[in-house]
Length: 398
Image 1 (cartoon, one colour):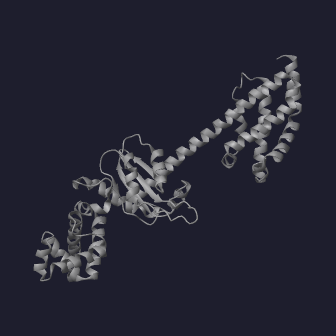
Image 2 (image 1 turned 45 degrees about the vertical axis):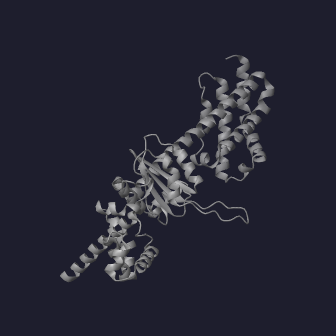
Image 3 (image 1 turned 90 degrees about the vertical axis):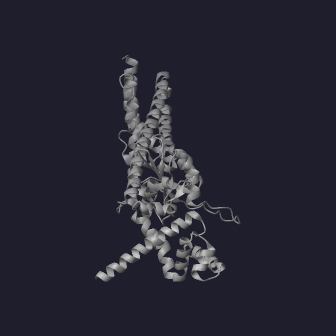
């Protein structure tokens, strides 16, 4: 090392304290966010600035032996600091430190000026590298947390920590939820799925388990519209599922029933998984298909949830409302959905049968005149009758 450089290094070490003081003063004068920080965070920022100055002197002494010493500038920063200031604010911090050092050091020699410029570039790249690694780690953590949440929803083994995990993911679907299950290739364009869901007014959790792709949908609050503009009608979950269908490969695609919130989504997931297992039994099933449209197949496959749904949503409401409606539906289905045959058996006019069937549709939402819905209703009557007979048998034994 020549004598001139030794003198410059000795001079740099002698003004380290002065440079640190000037830097802290400049930060306070030029960066509003620095002054708004709590004292502990300001102290951490000041420590980063002082480390940058010391690191520059070490780098200037021997640039070849420590080419990445700039990355050590952020080694003393606590994790909380990296979370509390953005990359843009970090670059502003670097700019202040470099400008203070350049103003004080550069006039002494051309070599020092070039050293400041080169070192400032290294520090900027080091800062970008630190934030890139932090973002990557955050992304990996979010992916693991998302997989854990989806798995909890699928298994129904939710605990008290599930709401906090959902909040940690930045979930915006605070309204109703539903689960969409299908198959997908190993490579899934998750970003495109999320964009499609957001455009449709839903937030999304994605779970890829082998060849099975699970999407947990949550309705987001509608965006505020201009004064006087008519309110925007939200899409149904089935309409949202239709827009997301391109993200799945060929095969059954089943949408579970809507539930009130994400914590209750395990019920929707159970129905969707049961529907996927039997969807091929319906030869002309639409894609996507609602899990509740597969109730007969699910019940035949031993799905207890499907049997309860048939009984609670169809059989029990009809039985509680009117035995007349229940008898008319039985006769109509037993007679091959013939109005005339049903009317003859019941000794009523066909219009009376037609009126009662309309009341059935209004009461439970399924129309017995359609072939597919007639199958669902007949399955409900059978399941309800079996359950009713079982209760009577149990009562007699007691």
